[in-house]
Image (cartoon, rainbow, N blue to C red; front, side):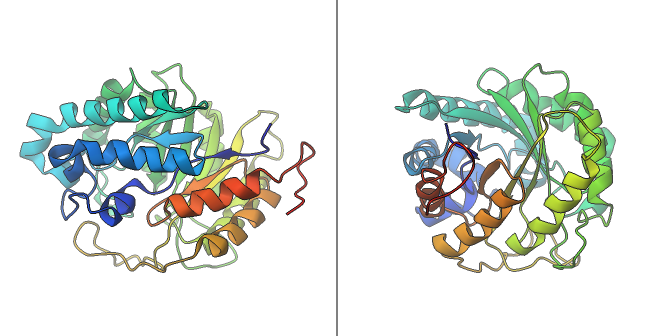
Length: 305
């Protein structure tokens, strides 16, 4: 039995790298609209690399990316198609692969200042409803503020399936991690734990930001007897500042090699991360490196590699 669960990598950048339709403002939703077979193939590449959980490609199926008109006419159907494609890929796998329904930021990544809870709840509800027939679990991802967390919790709790809450962190690489809103990791972890989370993850931030967040999460859970899991899926971007305008510019890619990313992952594992994968710019080659290392871990959690 493996000592951590291997999540997939970043779907959007994998679609772009493979030549699938991919451009602003639609991002990964464009492949759903124009070439859904490329989404299925991308899921398959992550499964072939060793992913034990694949994430539904619903991240951009929100009005922020689609625009209000396309969202109203096609948003639900595109979200449903994304769920169907992930389920199809998982069901074809030769070993067990779970499907994570994605509950992404309704008002744009890294922009807590744009968040509107009333509008967000309706979007979260659509995402949950359309993916529910295909998902084994949920990841409410790239949560940048406590306000976003408080809005998604009551929607996610409608489902009996486990939900993981994934927080995006400030990329300033300080010794203390915070959410991109500046709010504390400890308060976010405590809220998620109180809501019955299956786990707390940290995602879509630079790898250097993750270790401090894991330490703070463990401290926040030190008096908690729950079996809440911790995990990490970092991105391959250059640091993103608070002045970043989501959906208006390309993010700089760092080009971390699989071995460089693996070195970070080994540290996260030592700190207690038991779900590890990748976000934007982390491809099947990175997941394959994680898989090869995962196979060296003994039942007592030690590695002979």
